[in-house]
Length: 411
Image 1 (cartoon, one colour):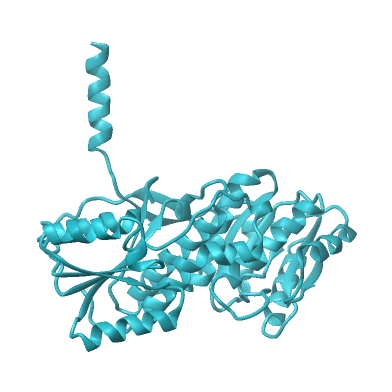
Image 2 (cartoon, rainbow, N blue to C red; image 1 turned 180 degrees about the vertical axis):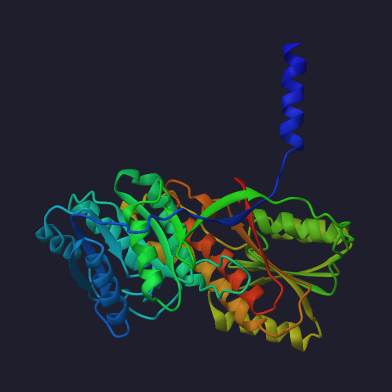
């Protein structure tokens, strides 16, 4: 009886939902939320940030907080920032406005610029021994419906923040996405979130009430499933000779793909590349393996020009490229953050731009569950995958095809 009961339970679990999606649930809000104690407001010291900072400062003060403001320069270093913080004394909370301005970060404004400032602030607070909860505000990081514009750079802060919540739960407040415009009701909603909404730490401030993020089962469609997708023409696979890319290439070949273009940093010199092309040929697919760092837009443009000149029309894109590393947030430098995210983020950004307006059957991004609910030691990886989810949402908002798949442990 016991083994039989175990098998029944296992079968029930196996028959349960395998796919999930993000949903947003209205939250109950106090009519007059009150803040207490001293709150530190961290804002960029640069153009375009003053209005948002002033509005938030006045809103927090109006709801009872003693607000002190620190303005962070673009070239600030971790140690310098850490020395500035203790002078403010005991804090009830910290609100960061660094993300909405995608600042501070020296050099070109690449996708990693947005989470870099948040990373430095988290580290500096830890170095200073400040354990007040850190709340990170964003704008456009999430879309609560299909009409909102998503900014993928902002989404990275949510990926990074979910890891911060796991690694530093005692000094983490949460993530709050602010609307446009940032009017009185929106600022009241922000203060309600900071005052506490029954433990909610991932909230979108929208009218008429803030919304809490939920992971819910994605039911099977009620209508009959469409015929399985048959790849046609040329399919471009980034990270094509890596573990994930090779599996994708075989899967595509088994389903009738005519021509597979596999991109990787080492190209034909990658280990196993010859065996992979032989396997694909045996499955009836023609394959081309090219050396290309997809984080390099010029290199990717040259690949597409070469395919165009050869008469190969790309009909689908599968982006599997990426790096990972077990690095706790307190040990991650901005340089390492950039190195670990650029294959996914810059690669996706370049593919999105270069295929904007081109007819595609599929534009698939290999994301990870780490970007959905975090993974300790995987802050950069989570940020990069949240960016991919944001790119897909942004493309769909423009009426373009896009699917981001947040895979489980294998991705």
